[in-house]
Length: 102
Image (cartoon, rainbow, N blue to C red; front, side):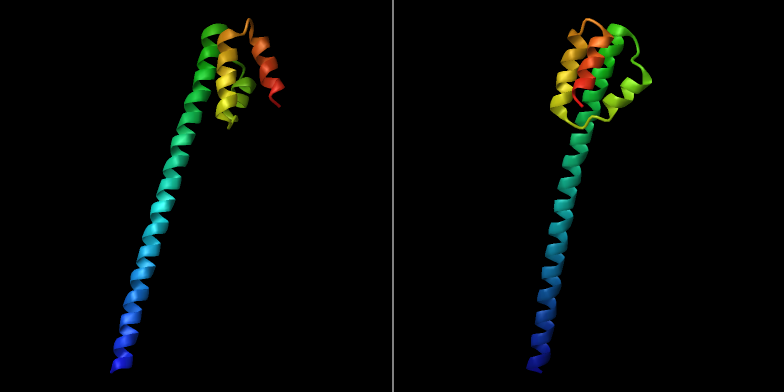
């Protein structure tokens, strides 16, 4: 009987450990997903700010220019492009800054 009781105890211990590891993995996955979602939202807002500044100053940017801005994944670059969109003398000046980033 002792052997059976030991096996049952070991099984319960392994099951509890498995549940704890599963819960930890789920929590880590949720946190990572949340951070990624926040980052994606921030980038989307930055891209929109650049495009809004361009439209307010120069009219709607070309489809190609807007698409290029929408593909940018670096927050610092989007900040710099927003400043350029607000301070550029012309849409061509902004276009050159956009091309220089490549």
